[in-house]
Length: 335
Image 1 (tube, rainbow, N blue to C red):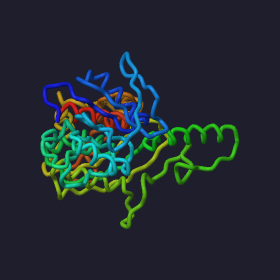
Image 2 (image 1 turned 90 degrees about the vertical axis):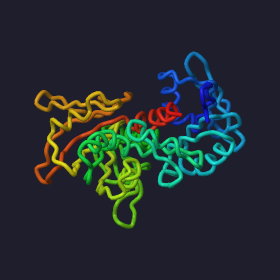
Image 3 (image 1 turned 30 degrees about the vertical axis):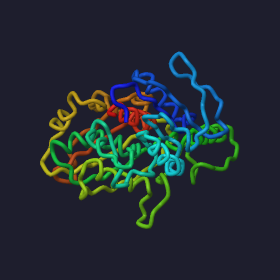
Image 4 (image 1 turned 135 degrees about the horizontal axis):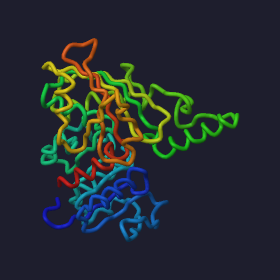
């Protein structure tokens, strides 16, 4: 565990989209690095990646690669995390894992630094979990309201960018648009249906109760992060033909009556979330507003016409940045 000395940080999955964003966040935020190690598969070993004014050589990820590492940022999938995170923790590193592998483990804190920073202090396994991207973006808007009015239930629909599926999701959208405009046939590979000029109400696999795994993450992770085991959440996650940044439409029911003006005031001065809410003037968040940016944006805040003590709102955030890489680096900053 790093103290006052500059820590040795390793990025596992350094050549992937989130690993690349982690590297950018460390540089842009001037994280006080003592040393940076970049770890990836054997086929990527030997590559040199830019970091600031220098280059760092990628090394192969092995169980012995964590000697001297203080903080290990993992973003290489759940299987890799399950296999290698315990080795990193055993070597003395604090693991910050971006996969779903440990999120619901009772001995692993699930952290959004703006919401529950105190949770990083209790980590008996030496692992801290990064929440799901849609959960993070939604809770950035909901947590300030919960603190003031007491959140009771959430009904949400997400509009999730193709980059949430990695580089192959972006490539599939590009190839399908090109094929359609040229009149060529194509076969979907990444998604179960055509994604170009379409939306698909399936993100991740379906479970026995008809919800997808992605939809249940908002329920289970939201309860854990907010410390509200009885919170009710119903969610529909939808893949949309947008390159980057997720949007979520939310109806939130509270224990106390709340009006839109009081809700907007809850965000005043808070880090990581800003209000953009003047529909009459054409001001409301869209994915392009947050792409490549740190802050989430919330708007379309209005009273529900159906439910008592409820608000409808719309929140947007960059799922690669705040939904993944930035949140992990912010956890490292807490350490």
